[in-house]
Length: 337
Image 1: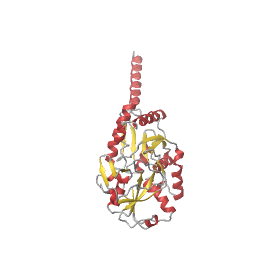
Image 2 (image 1 turned 30 degrees about the horizontal axis):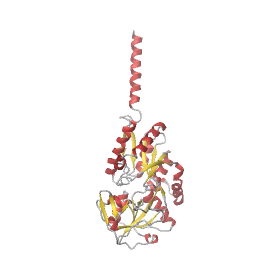
Image 3 (image 1 turned 90 degrees about the horizontal axis):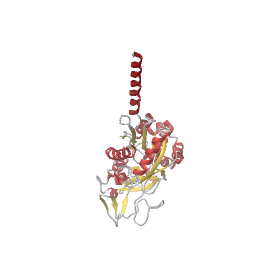
Image 4 (image 1 turned 30 degrees about the vertical axis):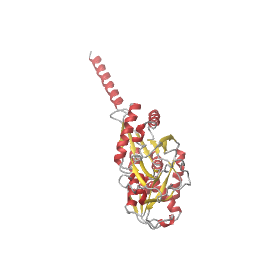
């Protein structure tokens, strides 16, 4: 009898241990999938929109997700590498390359913005500035979002160095919105931030077109519930992100030039993330991108402005790796330490 009782106790113990493990499986309430967003725009906007995405993914997959907005690009990479089997992140090209080099983070998909799978750096100055050429940036104070920002720092660093242009004071603004605000307020001479082409009715923007396809002497800028406009041209670059606090931002801030094209931001996963769960999440995200809720999340102009996402391979980001090599940049140069 004693042996039988001991056997029953052992079975109960093993059962409880098994249940404990099951409850701790990735995606359970006590072990949610960690979703990371880089702090390139206002953290509250990301947190709110990220929650919309998390709820949609949970409804589609039955899995639980927890949204995080680390304080910097470097902290985002650190967090993903610290959770190799439970993290996914929406990180830009430079951040992805560094995360891939550091711990094997794997890209799965990339942003699509209004049909484009690339984007650009825009160099911005005040409209009343005496800066008119690329060479005029020499010695001028430079506002950029974060040293880990692809469009905000890495690409312009390569282009400035290649042109032999040495800026003056460096101002790390903390985000793309803050860069535009710094130029608007005259806190720096020029800034670098992201550019997405404007929507021009009847004449879709193409490479080689003017960065500002409008004439302010003819049309006035305005803000409404849909966004920032000049006449019937809708502005989608980083200036639109501060339209509520600075509705005359287009009147005050102009685009000096654009960079070469940059591969779009990524959706990446920790290197040990379960392949079946990854496929399930990707399917749910592709479906989510077709819903109205997408525009309340990462598709919002005030969030990351993704129109959708598409599968992509690691090789696409070799151009970014080459830029690091050209500059001789290391992870320590980008993220410090």
